[in-house]
Image (cartoon, rainbow, N blue to C red; front, side, top):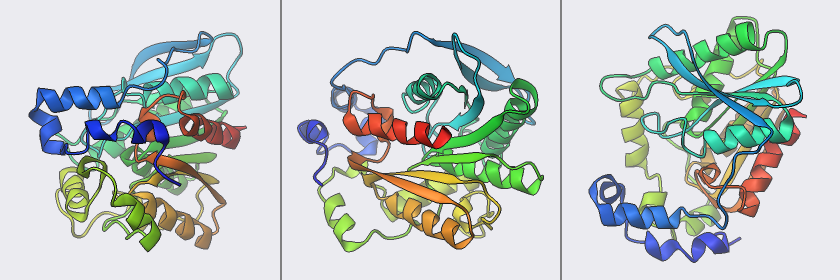
Length: 307
C-alpha cells in the first residue's frame, strides 16, 4: 500500500534532506522536527512507574530504565534495546521510552530498557553486546528471577537482542521469547524484491539504507566488513535452539529484506517464528507514537506475543 497518508503529506519537509544535512544544518533539523510531529502528543500511561537504575557490567555501570505496572505485580519481564545503527540512540528516544512504557502498560510486564554503550570514540563490538548481555543477566538473575523473560529490540537493538539470546542459549538458560522490530541482522543486507524496491524508490535519501550506509554502520560497530563475528550481525550465526521469535517488519524499509531472510532462516532451523508487516510504515516507525494506527498495531503485535 502507499506510504501512510499522514507521513506522505509531510514528506515535502524532508524530500531533499540527507544525513549530512541533519548532522549540521539547523534548518534541516527543524524540518525533521516538524516531520516527526505526530497527530497527538504521547503521555506516559498513569499506571506505569518509571525508575532509572544502573547495573554492573564488564565495561562499567550500564544505565537501565525500568517500567513497572503500578498496581499489579508483573507476571513477566522484557529487556528492550533501542536502535540507532549501533552508534546513536538513547533511553529518551520514543523507540526506547514510549515503546517500553506502552509494553509495560498494555502487557502488564516489567520492562527494562538498556542504555548500552554506543559505537563511538573507540567503542566497538563486543562492548554494546556485552552491555545488553549484562543487563539480561541482571534482569533474569537479580530483578525478576524465575519469571518468564523476553528479549527484544529495534533495528540494531534487535541485532543485539538476538545476539544476547544466542549467548543465553549457549549458556543453557535460553530466553523465553524474542521480539524483534525491523532487525538489522545481515551484512551484506539482502536485496529487496522488485515490488518492494519500486516502493522504496519514492522515499527521500535519508530514509534509505543503501549498501554504502550499511557498510559504514558495520565498520563503525565492528571495525571492518570482512570476517565478521557471527554474533555481531547474527543472521550469520547458528540459530537453532532459540525461543519463539516474533518479527515486526516495516513495509517501506530497505532492512525489511533482512527481517524476511531472518524469518526464513529461523523456520529452517526449527524455531517457531511469526511476522507482522506494518503497512505504509518506514524503518524506525516505533520512534513515532501510537496515535498512528500502525504504530499502535505494532505494539499490540508484541503485546499479543507476550500474552
